[in-house]
Image (cartoon, rainbow, N blue to C red):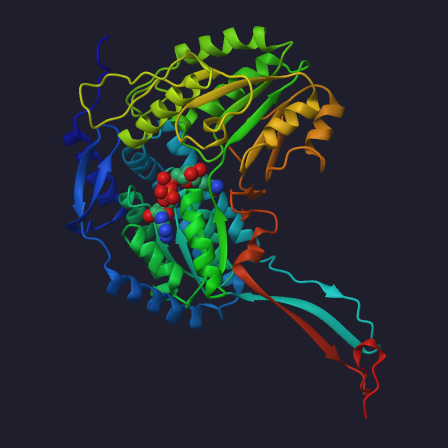
Length: 508
Ligand code: NAD
């Protein structure tokens, strides 16, 4: 088989440099960490990281800025986010390029990730005029009871490589209008896009006259994240990444009575029922499982198909997988770009070996795609047929790997769907309203995201995003998720001339 053509790393480096120059980023060159591109698997730039002292200074600056920022009226805080959103629109292409360069996303997905930043910025601007509390009926005459929401403090954002900009923006834009200030510890695998977002927010802050310390970037690995986790000035740690990371972060922040918002791993399933419209199901399933090279927290990893339809769906599914163009994510027509590094390719091949030993059959894919270099990791998305759950099927393998299982009754399908430690996203493909309603009911899917005739991935920012069980329980983005970034006070006002104690207590 001939190797697929990849661009030269030198050209990618020049492309990154041009984007960063247009955005106005001065790259802090050094040799603490490396900006690397999964497109060729090679280094682009050596960077200076933030040591412990710089991380400490970042938290101190954000804390200092909070003391001013919390008193600025929320609609004026929204002006900062509006300007930031405008700058993101101006640099849509540059930011998308950096995402493709560092995370390996294909063009339309990289553009889509930047669109998500714009969408959440728009949302946050509107939210800045809607941070309302409620008035509650008091049991005492001449009293008024109400809830007020106040800024929380410094929000520490720890983010993952696979949504290197949008996940930060979900947190940053909403937290800023809520009156919080930010310290961001991005994935060590995606420093350039973080520098670019940080620069655009700093420009917006300069232009609207916001305090400089409202946002600080800390470039580093796990130790930098741990510093935010343990710092009592960081009121909320919003951490997105693996369940392994969340298992460390959650208890450590809880030990100091800090707050967490955890967005962790998924192991998502879709049920295909006998009444499913297969023309609609097929592209939804292929995008959800092979899109982003399977590297989404919401990626579809388990397809639970009714025994009556499996024989009509599977040949179409495997044929669609066989046709998927794998290759250079910058090239027109590519639908599956690289894995972030060779490590997830090894994990995928280990999962395939384990599931085969469990009696599974690989129907298509799983082979490394030859590129002529060992440093880049391209793989053909795989479909595996297996009866029932085995240990490996219940784990999150962060790669394009789809297990196909079969079922006979809806109850059995829902039990299988829920029989994993994670609880992020789920779907049912059906034209039967009763099945759809059961799936969405209390005895249906136990996930945070429950879809009907829509794939597991690709959530809109207007809803609250997050999942249950080992996915961490956090909710970000729309709906009332902003509550996580504020503290609530309950206020009681006595406007009568009488003393009235609650529960009719008499005293003096
Ligand atoms: P990861 O857990 O390896 O790293 C995520 C971030 O956590 C990085 O910034 C890393 O430096 C930091 N980190 C790691 N250990 C830490 C610790 N003990 N203390 C503090 N910080 C620590 O994850 P990844 O490989 O970058 O991303 C893939 C994972 O993220 C997958 O499991 C995926 O499902 C998950 N993810 C979840 C969501 C969601 O919204 N639920 C979104 C994107 C990704």
